[in-house]
Every structure is written in C-alpha cells, then in structure tokens.
Length: 239
Image (cartoon, rainbow, N blue to C red; front, side):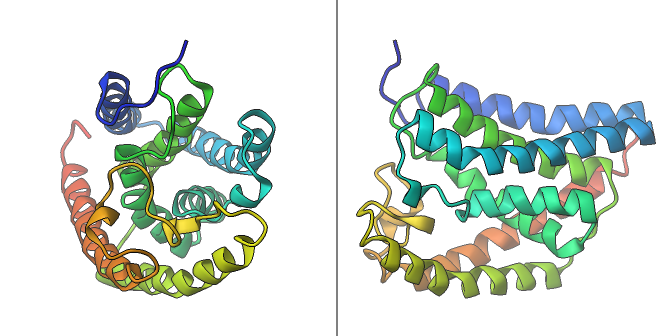
C-alpha cells in the first residue's frame, strides 16, 4: 500500500541521494575504465532511453495514471531537456547540449527536490517520475565527465534567451488549453504547484513571470560554475 508523498521524507531523501550518487559515481567508473567504445555505447543507450521514455511518457500517463491528454504534452522544462540531450547525443549539435545541461541542472533538479507527485514509493508514478528525472540528471554528468564538451558564458546567455523567449509562448498555450482542461499548467505559469517551491516567494501567476527570468539567470550561472568545477575534476587521474 502506498502512502501520501512527504516532502523530504524517507523515500524522497533516499531517491535524491541515490540519484546524486549514481550521477557522479557511474560516469566516474566509466571514465576509469577508459575504453572509448564502451563509453560511446553507453552514451548511445542513454540517448535512446531518454528519447524513448519521453515519447512514451504521454501515453502511459494517460493510460495508467489517468492524466488528461491536455496535460501530457512533452513541453515542460524537464521534457525539453531530456529530448534535447537525446538529440545532442545522436547529432552532436552543441545547442541541444546547452539546453539539456542548463535545463537539466535547474528545472529538472528543482523538480526532484520539490516533486509534483501525490504518493511516495512504491507508487508507479513516483518511480517513473524519478526514473525520468534521475536519468536526465545522470546523463548530464556522464556527458560532462566522459566526453569532451564545451560550455562558455555565451552558452549561458544563449539558453537564457531561449528560455525567456519560450515563456510567453508557453503561457499563451496554457491560456488556450485551459478552456479544454482547467488544470493545464505548463511551466507552472498558471498556478503555483502544491509542493513547497521557490515559486512560493514570488507574486501569484502570471505576475511571477519576470521573476522567473531572473531566477533562471541566477540558476544558469550557478550551473555554469558546476560545469567549471567538473572540468577541473576531469584533470585528475581518478576521473
């Protein structure tokens, strides 16, 4: 029998801790093996699973979790990040990695810390939620540690402009879809999520949108510092 989700409860903390540990230790192990073929095969598998899961997610959410078709479009920040990472892996187009990296270490991370779920482990929705978000988080670290990627301050600005330009489009889409399904809330631009989040400190939607842009800039800069730290760690033999 599943219990209601408790923020920072036992299963929540175990999930986050496990994801953080795996996200660093698994890429570090692959780096230690130092086999180019193995590294590339794992990368391809990760890319394929990311894309497959994101394409399958709308269907299993509707069929198994009774979600509305109007709320399962893969356009949340986490969905865009996962698809972008998958596309980057197969095309090596840098912009897709930039989007995946900054979205993956900001919106995706915040989604794990303050998840929008009703029940805890072993509820299927809880498991698939953390599988998808955790896989993206781990893949970001895998690409940074096991492959050659380059981010610059221009990357920060480029993804920030991309994110800010999407805000009004997502908001307009919400306004359109809400006439079909009242709970539509992509990017949480319509209603503040029930879980305790940073959005609680902002004005009520949609007046919080300018603050979201500022928050995005701060989080992107912090994420870039993480990248710089990873690049320094990469110089050590044990990585």
